[in-house]
Length: 94
Image (cartoon, rainbow, N blue to C red):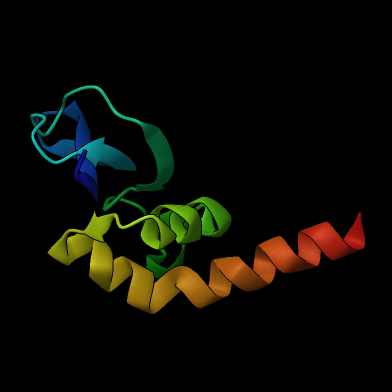
């Protein structure tokens, strides 16, 4: 099975919201997903708060061969390090 990491669209007309998901490449954009890996809300005023990622799970899917879409690859490049540090701090603090 070819897995892709891409965005699944939610929300109403003029107020879109996206989930970043691991999904079979052959599925429709809004089809059944394997796992939810994060969110993207373009209407949030603070740009740094628009994206939320589950870094550990994204790393897993990338390690087994999942390919990110162009837009998701940009998010991973910009924000992955931030969420990796946050998850490491949360695991070491508890």
